[in-house]
Length: 280
DNA sequence: ATAAACGCCTGACGGC
DNA sequence: TGCCGTCAGGCGTTTA
Image (cartoon, rainbow, N blue to C red; front, top):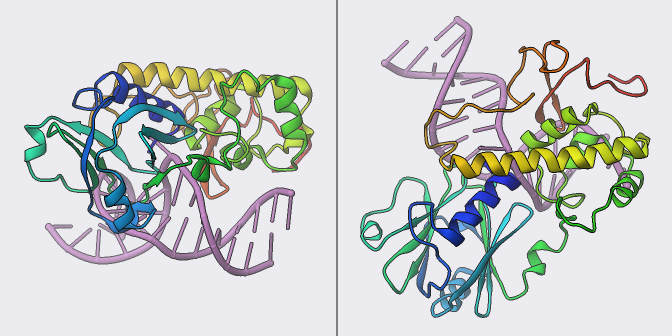
């Protein structure tokens, strides 16, 4: 389900209140429950259930698409993958039965609880004293000040890869998924199959700007309309290419194309996003 | 080193 | 109505 902006939105809600309940900062764990075994990536279930009780939540942060819940001695890391979601239930709600697709829950001493819901069962939880044991291979945060255009250019230069799969590679840069990658490439006027080390410095700088722009927009949009997918609704997207197959390009009017690249549906404008060489 | 294919899962949707 | 294939905001593993 989520890419960086959605994860960021959820993290902010867990800090400030939202997701149905109050902020979870300061909550103390009473017990944990795992309803679908594979949801727990590590440690073993007995370890997980033994270590959590008594630990207090100090902070909730984000790294790439991971939610990081900082506890006294451990970190609870959550990856929503395709269909995961979190909700906070008040004491009253927490007395009711679980909903379909609830996969795990953290019960707090005040009777409220944090529930992980995930229809497709791809999402994962980790409990780790050292978060780097899970996050260690992630690339830079898109908004990291240290990620200057010169740095990004060098990163692109050091690979010979198609832009679309490269941008989606979390060890290259953390947080982009299928939607925001397509949107970034469109804004930067780059073809998804363009090869990374063929970009000029200017193109690289533009791409970095585009990535930051679409992520910023995403965060702003999700912040104002919390209930998104799977929650019904009248959300219509303000995407420029994603799911706009056959519709006119907002810049030139040509029909937006869709094709499979790296096993993912990829949307782009064949007019605005041309390959520099001559592949197709 | 890069990229494709597949597995993991459920649900929604379109065609027949 | 039911059945079937396809697709979905992700990622790890295996294979070319």
